[in-house]
Image (cartoon, rainbow, N blue to C red; front, side):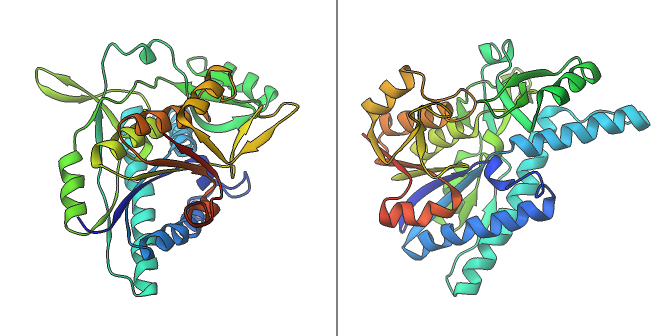
Amino acid sequence: MPGKLAFIAIGGNSLIKSKAHQRVEDQHQAIRETIRNVADLIARDYRVVISHGNGPQVGFIMLRSEVARRETGLHLVPLVNVVADTQGSIGYQIQQSLSNELARRGIGGLCATVVTQVVVDPDDPGFAHPAKPVGEFYDAEQAAAIRRQYPDWTLVQDAGRGFRRVVPSPRPLEVVEEPVIESLLRQGFHVVAVGGGGIPVIRTAEGLQGVDAVIDKDLASGMLAARLGAELLIISTAVEQVLLNFGKPGERGISRMTAAEARRYMEEGHFAPGSMLPKVQSALGFLAAGGKEVIITAPDYIHRAVVDGRGTHIVP
């Protein structure tokens, strides 16, 4: 397969720039802006696999479903189907934006989205302890109202930014469509895969069966990136650099750290669960499996992070 392979994981929150820009059209525009940086890498002879988060988008669809049930009696959309829906809708925006950008620059290549299933363990403790944030942030007053209105929801404080709903998040074990992704890469396609961490499925005597959960996209991305032999894993998020003492006195960005240093910072509690922690865990797993480098940065810095060292670089 020609060219170097980079795996780029785009955060779901980084596609929603503010509460005033939450529409589907706003998201598409944010993707177009991010994709310009991805196209810059392709111009430097990289092939790319792109994954994306879906936390806010899953939350929006689930809220719409709840409202429709309350107002009209329409059936609820199962969470596993919501994940699949976001793979299609966000994947469509990414593949269209990238294919258009490459054509505009006169660079060959097309992008294709693979609706991706990821196998999880039915006995994973994540099912008993919901921890994956989805949806928008709520202040204390809004959270109290939502708890009254939707008593089945679990709301937790998310890194000091407000309250968010949390759902089960089992660990990814394998990507069902991995051979399909490899085949597309060999044929010269750029690929969107494991959107939202993948559609969670379990193996049964009757075959694969979907389960209601959201797999962390960073963990699934790191696993698939290693399996595909990517040299570089880029995890985009809402901040330019990983921050130590996030939201506390002495907060500072870090431009470079080894895997051992990252592990120590993690053990010291610098990275919030459901936020930066899974990104660092994904980086460590990727490097342990043979990856050469991980970059964590904001979408606008993706190209400059590769070329000029912006963002946070984690190396073996």
